Image 1: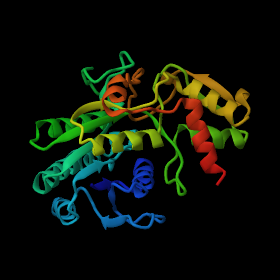
Image 2 (image 1 turned 135 degrees about the horizontal axis):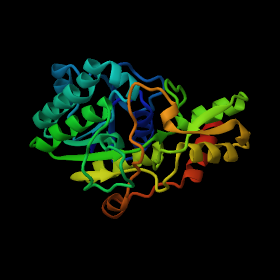
Image 3 (image 1 turned 60 degrees about the horizontal axis):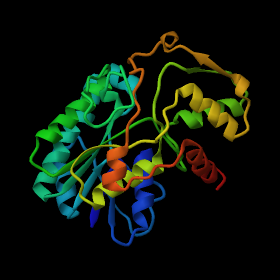
Image 4 (image 1 turned 120 degrees about the vertical axis):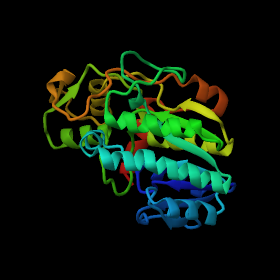
Length: 298
């Protein structure tokens, strides 16, 4: 099976390349705006700007792709709020181009989406929950989902929550690395205790994408961790695991933070469908911290 990954420079894209590169049943095509520094031997690379329709169609067709795992997106929530045209171009027009490319190449699409399509009035959520985004990032990702669902290609949409992990060259941080870095530097951090998520290890999300791709799964799947935690609880568990000073972690109400984009208070996912239909088996949060810690020691 020939699997093409978009966004190979991102956290998920990196984990996908590392996962698929060593599977004998997969030929991996990594794509991004620029070539990642450490692509494994045997992985093909093609430059790809998903907002360029002609290039997107050409790359997918020329590589004879069977499945596209679409991990590229503009995911910086506050930047999406303030740079709306750029956000829509990446998260909606980019999806339009991927759909057209899959249609012409007769390729299956596995598309990565987000819990931020929901308003956060309750959680955890299963796949039947009704989307109602409260920020522009969520609006753009929901618009992308709708385009896929209305298309005539074969597709699976994998929604996820608060992804964490580490790569050799982290261009962006995530909650676990942010907490660890600040506590190691002896800094006091204010962390919200009135939002709830099911944090997702990047390796688990990558495996979920592979499971959906290898089975050419169809429909919507929620892919995340199993534990419902507040960011404050995540910070405390991170401090405990790395033996850092928990006294530096201060609970905060989300209303005390000034951010361009509103966040949904409570999301988190029910992952029973992915477990039953795809064979998805996520790590516990503590196990995920162990995976991350082992990589940091290398």
